[in-house]
Length: 175
Image (cartoon, rainbow, N blue to C red):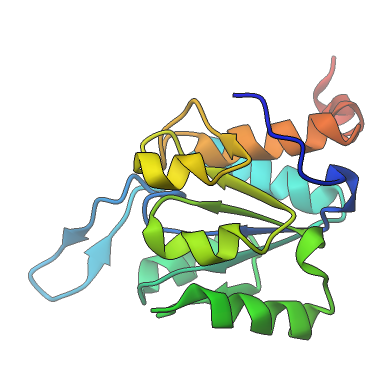
């Protein structure tokens, strides 16, 4: 889907991601000992690393608390991980203060109604393809891929291509 004209995407310095339903398909596997497992998409992870190599910031903003999320963040060298955020807007506002960012400098990817208050504040809001219609309607961009199935990779590629950073990031892979 083409993005709605909302602002200058070249101002985006941070990508903030919901986790369950965005970086994962929203499924949880609860083990008998109470621990849980989640499926994360490797393409999303690789694009996050490319985003970081472009000198841009990445953080996670999740409504749930999960050890699996912390492990994935460590693997991707994401140091900003906010979990257990029942209300995401106050956590988002804290990120702005802590990182000294303006709302227009943040892109956010979400999948559910609790993401809408953040959608209204950021410079670029993306919804995954399988988000409810009411959520997709408030997004600047709706992915073709579903959450946990490359949606984050799609958003990152869109932002990096649109801002002219993509070709330089691909140079190490060209033969």
